[in-house]
Image (cartoon, rainbow, N blue to C red):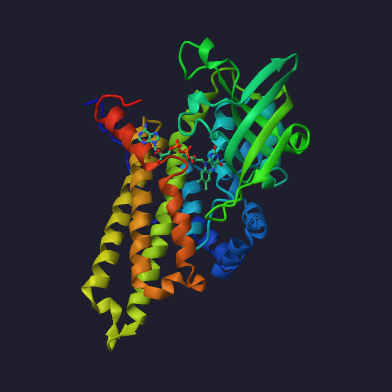
Length: 396
Ligand SMILES: Cc1cc2nc3c(=O)[nH]c(=O)nc-3n(C[C@H](O)[C@H](O)[C@H](O)COP(=O)(O)OP(=O)(O)OC[C@H]3O[C@@H](n4cnc5c(N)ncnc54)[C@H](O)[C@@H]3O)c2cc1C
């Protein structure tokens, strides 16, 4: 079995780590209660005030090194920030991309790119929230994406289309993956893709068009069209043709960060269900006295605890610089499933009231569901585990 479980001993903190960060984030979230998120959801509006508060407190620059004006915190701390937002009933989708796209810029961006952008991102003057990978025709099969960037002198000319590019209307910069060498001209299909840091302020209206998608959740997601968009060659990150590798490098960090969001959701569902099960009296007793109500909540709690352990393991192995693909993927799978089961238990515990918007449960339930599909779907994780961990034959 070619598994990665044999990682050298890595110590793992089991305590309530980063208590100051947890408390600080909770304090900000208290100013943005369920009613705030409900209204945004109804109006399909962007949480500008929340993003401003989080930026002002420095949380969104958690992963930017101190030399560039950021907090220079480890990945686990960034995850804790996202987890606390979700555990307090909010949603981090408006803010999380700045964290999970950051690795590509930090590891592969040039000194000039970093000093041009990072201090202004850290100061909240620039937003790096758009990540353009998915396309309508190729879907999960990223190597077949069709958006082309063709070098012309000191520019690249971009043509094509992205879909589900979240926050594009609320971002100044986009991390864009495009093909620079046609698929038929590369020896390996993972080659010939390049990643660009596109300044959207210059692009929109000059070859870039953004169209919002009406979706099940308020995710401010869009379609982005490129029609002879000219971007300076200096927007290229790292070497031409190696972009997929750069993006993949950041995938484990992304999996760990979004796992924290699911974990936060799971905790919120369990806490909300327990509270209601204790309070709601039917047949002259709290419904929580019935084992039919108790057991699904207890089971969801067990799943949440197990998911948290795997997440801590993934983060510890990541921080130790050891291969963590197995654990990051397992963590993403287990935390998304824990949130889903906890959501179901919370819905069932609340009976008809689960459907009343003012309880926030149906909103959180819709929001938690997305983690089973994006940024990577459950099937693709299982396929990674089956083929790369367990050594089963490759299916694609
Ligand atoms: C709310 C939301 C926000 C998003 N934000 C972004 C963003 O900001 N940037 C971005 O680039 N993308 C974004 N995405 C896109 C997201 O990453 C993709 O939707 C996801 O990766 C799945 O791709 P797809 O929708 O094309 O599904 P497809 O690739 O068409 O797959 C459809 C189904 O088939 C399954 N499937 C496909 N191939 C296999 C296989 N070989 N074995 C087993 N099952 C398979 C998949 O698991 C999936 O369940 C977002 C999506 C959503 C819903």
